[in-house]
Image 1 (spheres, one colour):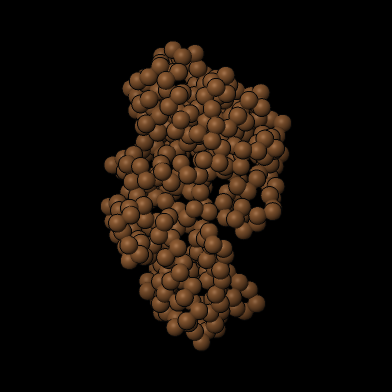
Image 2 (tube, one colour):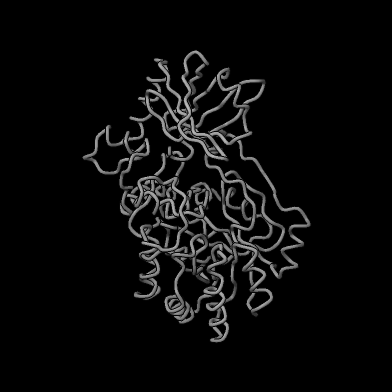
Length: 435
């Protein structure tokens, strides 16, 4: 599979057009999958295919008419058909060859690898993904734009730190808070002088993956440490599958029985929202995955001068949240801009979740060589603690486990941008660096 956001195809014919994702790409052709019913199959021999490539050097398109394409069926099932397209177009070959070479710096962090190895990885041939250290260096380059930012001195709402990575949690538990904060600020190019006056709490748990959610012993240690530091606690729960409900029910009842000082539980599926509201005394809020936000960093690349405002919060939806006891919510500073909800909310920044899969993409790639493999995730090898997936630089995206996380650097450098995301209802900022 080709990294999200770097390439796409467009079928044009019969007075309509359909976008499709490219599975593989080479100078000699490409493969793509179409779901049945999306486009009349009997018209495929009469269409034009446009290949649309995005990267730092610009946006390039090449149109291939029916005389330049030879289509064959590679695989089919009840839902979709995988096609392979071959072409002899010289313009296509030149464009795709250059496109693959351009990604060497982004897809290959090890200097000894050459263009051939990069092309293999880009085409989805089994290759180990870059290491977490490579991922840190990759994102560190992105974060230089706000080095030492003092933007938090201009806001009057409390700041929480999201502690959901092994490195941050270990540092939090083993150092004094002053030393922990120094290291935290150094790693993320923040000003400790400014930030230390605004921090009021921590966000624990994990929003996206139940497999890496801390067990009860680990969570109790984190809660105890936060309480000793006089910090408020926000606990994020992931989407909980049916087979995991008893585990999280036991955890919640144990926390409640012990009287642990948790100020808020952020839930990301309706089942846990109902359970907490009816079976516990905890206060819960609508998590990041329950609020609909358009998330597409390509918009900022293709529409440089546009910042579309979109809202997905009709009155009946907000009334339903309140009826479930959710008088707060969590939003992300995602791209493109989404107008804030009309109830108090926590704003997560500068990273936002671009996509989360029920399958662990990283585990699939490490164990099968194909990140598109669909397998139930019953066990976790914790690959996300040492390996990452990198994406083209214009995406500012990194793949961790089952989730793609994207950086919105503008929200850390421009107060007018941050103010727009905060709106009138934001009463908390949550710093989230998931790598």
